Image (cartoon, rainbow over all chains, first blue to last red):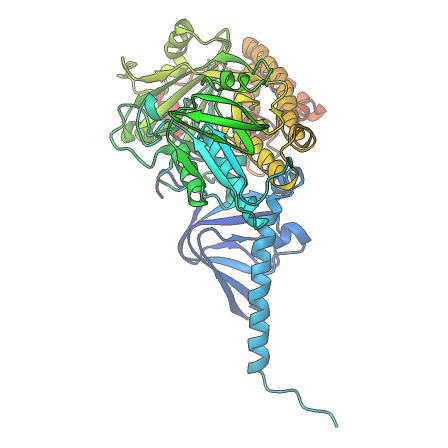
Length: 130
Length: 452
């Protein structure tokens, strides 16, 4: 780790946060790549990848639900942690700070919408009722 | 003439330190959101790429935990060539002992930075420190940097006019982002700005070239904080940065005598290698620091940001620059540029910093008293050490000290946490126990182990 680096270093495949755990912090990727995995039954499905500048874990801060996915380092990665209370206090002092998060969330909804359309085209048509 | 910014409006920012560059950055970011085209000129004669006094804005150079986090959410990254050292812990030194306090996740959460290109004897100039980095971000968004000193400001048909060299230009808004160490305040008097400006005192900062090896061995990635029984000294810190450590002394009019008393105290000597003797001719400065805000930081089409107006007492000056610069930009873009707009939307942010400093003054006065009462300072250290030894326990003293020394929480928060009955009870108990404890002094070896 370089002397001037900020945040915490994660080794390849090290888990940053795990699906189902309570979410009391959010994260900003400083360097490297991370995988977003959804654990379904015995297996896991890759639902996305994160890179420098990406924010994750913010959903649990806003909706107070358990973590919706597991995030794991893909190669070495460095991540900065933001505590829930500190972040919420800052947003209430300066609501414009939430704009950045909103902007990223809306981009994510757009790409999810595109995924949904793609999946609908892939899946076999539902049987027609007579 | 409308007191709002419109498409094609012009803004002049006098001073290109963090307050000026961040104000430009946010003005241009918000204008873009509103699909508005703004022309922003930053007047800054300094070249932040230069080492030594020519490129330096004289400050301890700490980006606090809370500012690192806020900037990360804003999308402003502090790259490894700007951050000289990521800080993950601090070591509290008293006259008798030392105790180490880690961040909750052992994470590097504080950025130690140089203001300009580094001390004058730096071997390799990096990107121009934090000032150069923030200025480059503003430039990427379209801010124009005018590398000259402003000669005069006056009014021209209701608009502030800025003159430099042989040229003059009127603007829709003038932002005063000069620090307390410049003559910017006199410029604003030419506009009829009547405020007497902030109240200041003198600090002392020096940069010691110890080399990477010694710094890794003796200081590590810790910020070293000193609570020593030296009159007039409120706070002292040694911060590792690359091949240098920055020594920062704050208090009431720090003079040579006080600086000598600091370096000669055993606790400070123990931090350095046994053979070390203070270097003659090291880069040092005695900047004025703002200890009480200017009363009225705005008028129609003029607003003061950064420490020419209000800053946080002793700590997190760059954080205060961020908060005032952003609040001024929000007001100017989304409300307007009249005195009433600033009164309604800018003053609350400005005042919250100023009011918090009142709690800061009280807190530092209490710390001053604690330093003089040996059992109390021992009790503080014992309570901290006990918290650090037991992971997962309440860490009330550790967090109070952490927030106070790193500038991570408002002084008001810290103040009220120390009034909690549990806190007072535990401190009293540990202080009483310390009367029977030994007052063994840590040697240099212990300080090294703690810094590890």
